[in-house]
Amino acid sequence: MAGKASQYHRGDMDIHEQVSTFHLVMNITKWGSLVIAAVLITLVLWFCTSAGFLAGAITGLVVLGLGTVLLRSRGEAEH
Image (cartoon, rainbow, N blue to C red; front, side, top):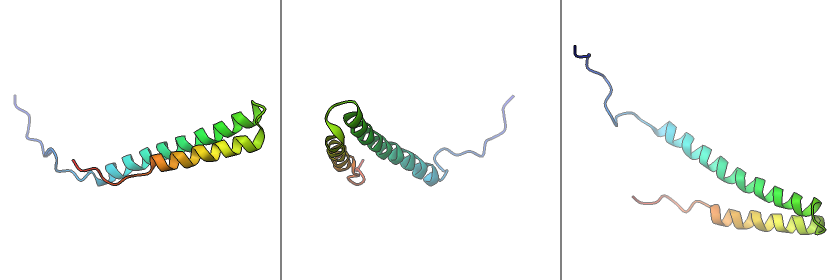
């Protein structure tokens, strides 16, 4: 027995909200990981080595700066 016809049409749904949510989650993940890495490096150098606070803070700031430069959005890629 044949089922009744579906009202679904592939590709007709507006997915703007889903795309926005995806980009938000990816940005939070990207920048959050960078902050966690910089804080972790700072704390490890401060407390677990003889380098001290200043060396840990400088290294953390360098990691944060380099990460910011490398992780910036470069615009929309053309497909």
